[in-house]
Image (cartoon, rainbow, N blue to C red):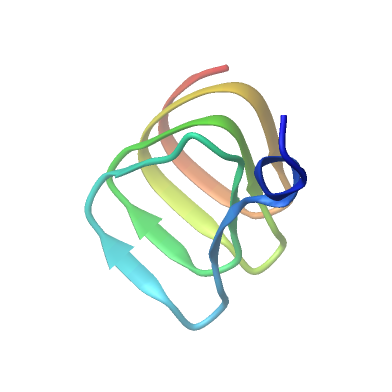
Length: 72
């Protein structure tokens, strides 16, 4: 595995809102707002983040708001 693939992640920064589904082959960190679905190896929701929708991940961590169906 290359060094870049180990360090890669998808980040939704605080102050950013997405109204749509997101699929990623690398971990996702949400500090903003995601409405709809998320699929990735792992999902981390920070204290300022929120996700509403269907989540399908292998690993899930949340300090923020979550609403919907979680498959982790």
